[in-house]
Each structure stands twice: as structure tokens, then as C-alpha cells.
Amino acid sequence: MSGHSKWATTKHKKAAVDAKRGKLFAKLIKNIEVAARQGGGDLSGNPTLFDAVQKAKKSSVPNDNIDRAVKRGSGAEAGGAEYSTIMYEVYGPAGVAFLVECLTDNKNRAAMEVRTAVTRNGGTLADPGSVSRLFTRKGVIVVPKTQEKDGAPTEVSEDMVLEATLDAGAEDVNDHDDSFQVISEATDIVDVRQSLQTAAIDYDSADVEFVPSMEIPVDKDAAAKVLKLADALEDLDDVQNVFTNVDIPDDVLAQLDDED
Image (cartoon, one colour):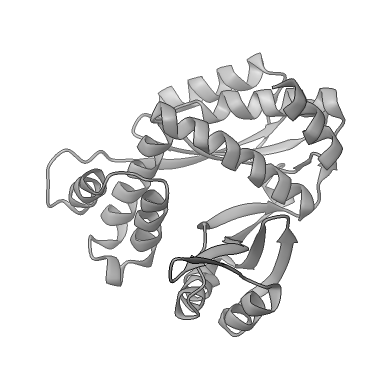
């Protein structure tokens, strides 16, 4: 899971940049619309919508934008689009595997843009199933170690997270620098998230992700190429998520950061 954590850290850094460009906002709004369309606009009865809204709020999406997205998705307001989910399987530089999750209202456009980004950045589209078999759908919740309670910073320990989540379905709690990563079955993520809230423990994100069963460590040159392909894919409007089994060691990440 260490490589997954480092990849997630890299994605979080890029997410901050995306937010400034507005791309992250657009993707979060799209998630809200789809969740509302599939399960209705009542947050209390639609946990997928609840999590989509919470994620948007944590990323500072304005409440008005969130409310309008819920209304469009649920049909209470006109203008909602019909989105389809498509998963592309890709082999990138150094044999690194990618799963590219698209949410689009135009499948042909999404296919063309993904194919172009892949071929221009050293990757190849893979046969269905050849990459997805390397991943498992899991619930992944990121819990910051330092949190604010009653206006003062407080530290959350691994024991506190374990005590709050084990009975709810948590399979593992990994220590990653300034946060804990709670892993569960995809179907248990709502219960685990709610158990954290009941214990008054905040979380940065709660998502169903594709977690690799094995990772591929890469050197600096390969890491740069992998991240270039990931950037190209995540810059596409139809791409919601990019998952990969790359393992970028800490020293390699540090070298790349020094060059930025």
C-alpha cells in the first residue's frame, strides 16, 4: 500500500492545482449530479450523494454550485446531462498499469481524447481485463493525524482510528506521514465513514478506489514519464479518476520535487 499512498499524495498535490484551474470543481459537481440522478436528491437517504457533497465541500466548492448540481441531477431543475461511466485500461512507461475512469456525456469524444493522451505520452491501450485484474475495488478513507477540536489542534492516534472503525468493517489502517489511510471493502465505506464521524474523528476524503494488488517500483526517469502520462489523462475533462500501480520511492519523489 505504500506506493498507493505516495501516488495518492501526488494526486492530492495536483488536486490543489486543479482546484485553482476550476477542473476539480467541475469533476466534483459532475459526481454530485450523477449521484443525485441515481439515488435521488435526499442526502440522508443517498449515502453516495452525501459523500459526493462532503467531498465537494472539503474542496471549497460553493454551496450554491452544490445545491444546483443536486437539483439538476435529481430532476428538480432543468439542465442535467446524461453521463456514462467508461473505464479504460492502459499500460504506461515501465509497464506501469493504469485504470482511467471517465464520466462523460459523449463516449466518442472521451475515447478519442484518452487514446490521444495515451499514445502521445508513451502508453498503450490494453485489452479489457488485462489491467483491471491487477486492482481491487476498496474503500479508502484518509484521516489527518492533526485535527482541530474546540478551536485547538489535537492529535489522532492509530489506536483511536482502529477503535472507531474495526467493528464497522475496516480491514487495515496504514500510517502515512501526516495521515492514516483506512482500507475497507467498497461496500463498507459508508459504515466506516459514519463510525469515524460518530467518534468525532474528521477525514480528508472517503472514496471507493481501485487499489493495486502489486506495485511496480520505478526510478526517476520512469517516474517522470509516468507522472507526465497521469497529468495528461487527469487534465481531460471527461476523466474523473486515474488509478495506477506505480510505486515511486520517497527519494525519487524528493528528486522530482526538487526539479519543480
